[in-house]
Image (cartoon, one colour):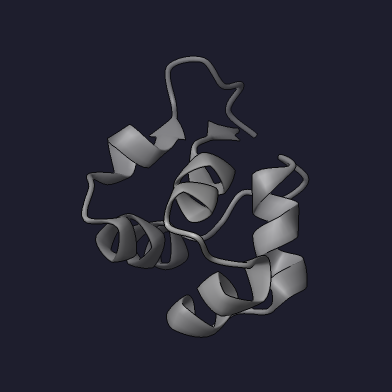
Length: 68
């Protein structure tokens, strides 16, 4: 699923590790989400969107993604 996690993380000046710590997941999980290798749970997607102060739909592109 396409997402804006990397864009928003870099704009905020955060490392993957720092963002992971903020939402209580590993750096590897953040990397996997950013590269599209892993689709987060609804709760993790919610935590990421809330961290950046945006809606889940503005963080993840559901329209342009294939449902798994």
